[in-house]
Image 1 (tube, helix red, strand yellow):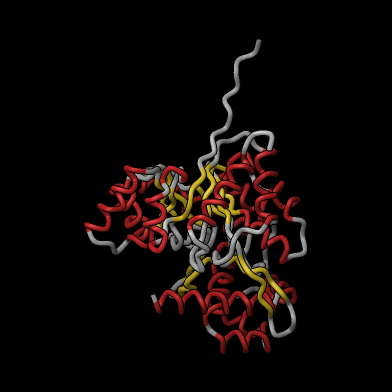
Image 2 (cartoon, chains in turn cyan, red; image 1 turned 90 degrees about the vertical axis):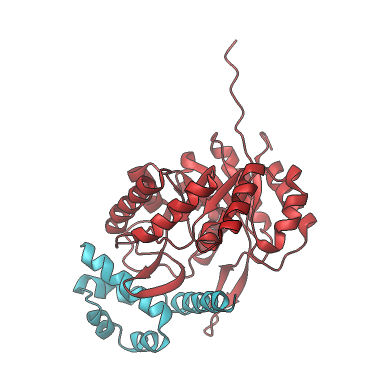
Length: 71
Length: 282
């Protein structure tokens, strides 16, 4: 469903920019997933999350934002 | 005797950066084309826009967008397309391009390029967004594959398949970033040359070359970060040679370098290296 795809994008965007949410997501991914409207099928995919990649991507985006703010 | 077959044309150039401006002007005899970041000019003065137009009258200029966010399940922001359309109207570039990425969702701005889940939904909405961008600007953008340190969950297709579906749906040409392809492949433990075959190589009209560095997570995981601050590794030039062998299409090659500049002679040497790679029978 298109709304499901939007929910995922909304969650990913927040995970990239919100360290406390990312930390909570790591501890209770299904709770956070439900808060963003993910369905049961999406919950299954939470088991395959690349946590290291998520952290590194978030750090990279944070650095980009900081560089842009400084320029 | 058969008719002569025209040899593909490959212009080789560099990304326009303010700290390279003087050196680029001084070496236009060795630079076929220049790529300018469109977003840098959205708030430019009339004088700056006229200077960019002047550059475009001296050397072919391509505009490169970095924040439209076309690849998403959301509608693209039409005010951003309008802004780009005004710039295109003023500069009259030979082409423009954007990334297959999302950069925001709702009120949340990521601040950089992120890969959305590769699903039928993002294919369909991306095609709609690209068609809207083409309608407003009057030019179909070339679409670029991005580097990602994080493979999005819920993806149902490979990056190559997803790209084929989008380009097939809207008829856009491809801007193939070979370092992005390389980084995504090695970070996932795949063969980059096998990944190359998965992309719609017949649609490639532009190529990006860049470099990056290895970074580490606290858990010991290492990833190759595409940072545009390092020279393209040998593997990127090998991929360029492989691309040349696999398609007879005309495509331009752009070297991207955002900082940590090695000096113009080193950059020109990399352009020469790219020219050699796309030379027929190389």
